Image 1 (cartoon, rainbow, N blue to C red):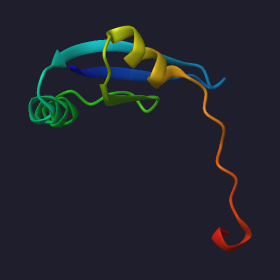
Image 2 (cartoon, rainbow, N blue to C red):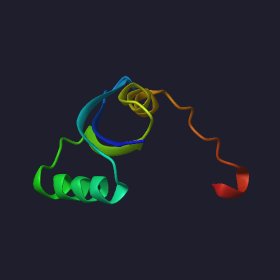
Image 3 (cartoon, one colour):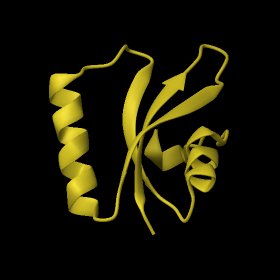
Image 4 (tube, rainbow, N blue to C red):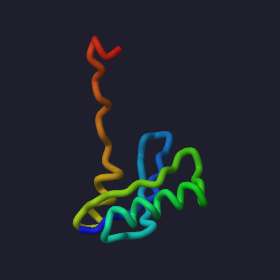
Length: 78
């Protein structure tokens, strides 16, 4: 399965969108590319580079853009 690199953009309403940057077969290659991108091509405050390991590009996009519930903080975690 390939590693996909995306630029994930978050809106103020909580909606996320993902744009594919590249795809790699090895994690090491994907990790090095993300490090290079983060240092050479900084993004806006509402954007971030993300790596996702999925069978298809569509599965990776769905995983990165789905709405997740906020974790509930336990009393001892406050």
